[in-house]
Length: 171
Image 1 (spheres, rainbow, N blue to C red):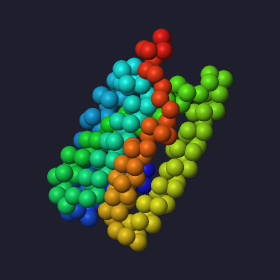
Image 2 (cartoon, rainbow, N blue to C red):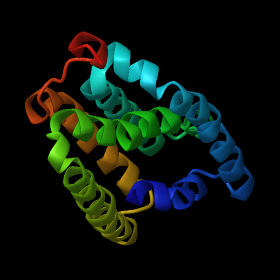
Image 3 (tube, rainbow, N blue to C red):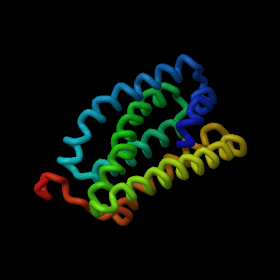
């Protein structure tokens, strides 16, 4: 969350302005909308953990490119991965919780996901990103996010148990 909130500072540090930021938002949303539409098909085909993995890998690529390249044109290209990240992480995580948490605890599981992942996660991410911008520079949040997302993608098989796609479970 933090690198996204402070994304305009990154764009400005790489020579872009308000027009570049607005154009990048259009790129981000152009892929996000169709992916949201096809979430069900993606979950049926590769399962919730696969959807999350795609989102985390997309985030790792997006932030690594955005933080480490000097050419703003590559940052434009990388922003298409925002939609893939939303598809995988923001939409995939609740689907995963729904698949692994017993029915009687699903509302609690979704509540915890929202409280920890969205609320507390956003607060800590924004706090850390702000500190990084102030003490290291405007590219630091993207660079750190890229490195950590890469590590998270590599650790995902050990962090999240596999869930068979709904089609294989007879759903």
